[in-house]
Length: 176
Image 1: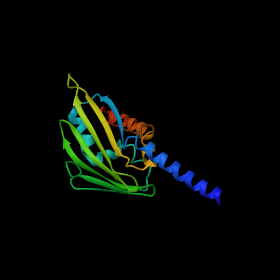
Image 2 (image 1 turned 30 degrees about the vertical axis):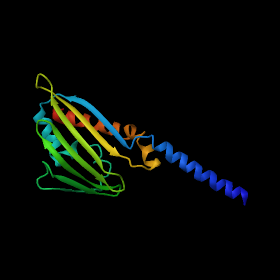
Image 3 (image 1 turned 45 degrees about the horizontal axis):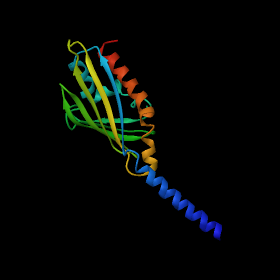
Image 4 (image 1 turned 120 degrees about the horizontal axis):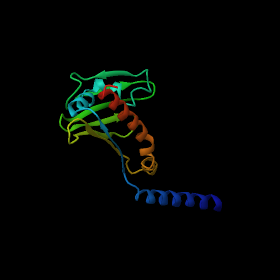
């Protein structure tokens, strides 16, 4: 009986210590990728502002070929959205802000995952022949230790897919 009591107290103390340590971890994970696309801002904006065009470059639309996609009408501008429902997952992307000179900001809401605020910002290069692109996602992790630990691997999990998406977007915009 004494062993069980000691074990129970040890588990409780360990849980409190883990939770206490997790308070030092950030409750938000940010994943960012940048690049330069050799095309004018309006060309790049046309591909990021129209959600129907995302299928050609968005790295997360291809893994689930069974997904049913539904788009708002119109598929671009503030309030535009698309949703998907497939075997792997379901969710919705909603455009929060859209500006041809700056880019877009969106909310990504995936079933059983916390909502993600994202944005794709555009800036013309000094000569106007290319576009600097900045894609970022901000993931609210919450207060639970196991969610906060995901923040340490967020860049390794989402970063390569974002690089892939920027590469595909670059090829499309540059006509390659």
